[in-house]
Length: 106
View 1: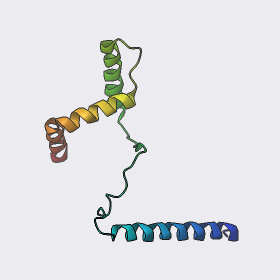
View 2 (view 1 turned 30 degrees about the vertical axis):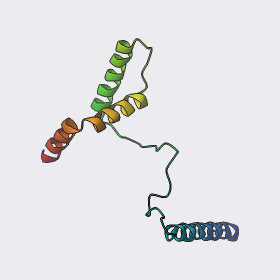
View 3 (view 1 turned 135 degrees about the vertical axis):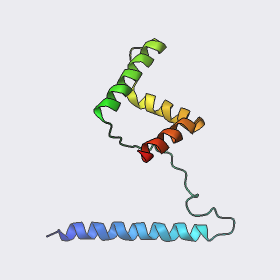
View 4 (view 1 turned 90 degrees about the horizontal axis):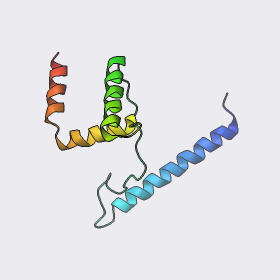
């Protein structure tokens, strides 16, 4: 059975969140207010988790190792590699879209 103290904390958190939502809605109702979803800009990085097959992981680590050799550095972090790959993909999405279509059709 949950403790009464925990219940009080949950209620207080719920009330606080509700008050924040009411305040945000009121700000959007002001003249020249930005539409919902456009009022806050996220400043913290977003963490994602990605599960890879052993073969894809091997390919990724081999690529990172060869990049380290090409860049003449001891190591290139996998996170750094993924960020660079995402930027390249965003600039030129055609091959990725082609691969996604092929994989979905298989």
